[in-house]
Image 1 (cartoon, rainbow, N blue to C red):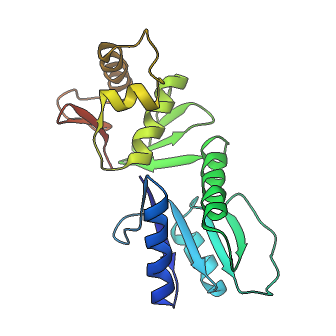
Image 2 (image 1 turned 60 degrees about the horizontal axis):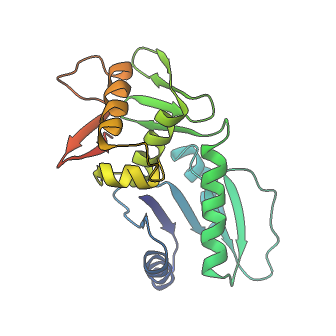
Length: 205
């Protein structure tokens, strides 16, 4: 689940944009109580610096008034002129997220760990220990991160991470999860990375 924070003085616009995103795109939320994965800044340009400082490595989409000129963009700052197509806007968001996760800029932090998808490694922030991961392990962690608090079933892992490969069984998934935990977690009785809930798996934040 990708959480979108919309910053706007126009409450009606904010609620309408959130409603449209939730209605037309699966896997999105607009929960202001959770850390954002994406920020939409509606015209309030002076807030950009403070938002970047508070939410480091979170892409910010700055909505421009009609006639305003776009400034220089970075992987974490994108400018979108009003009015805009919702489908085009959602595609821009997906492109930004994909770029960040697949580049050396893509570092995700959760529960005392830092995951670098590009380097294929996870770092324990308490001990500074770095652990190399396989590409499959990185894919599993990225998918768990995107889905946030929702437990992921073995069937969903088969579909989204393995693509229903005929040689994959639920036992294979259990083995991958077990090996990943063995690599990273120090106490098997106290999970720090992945929890098992209702027959599924959830990343611990």
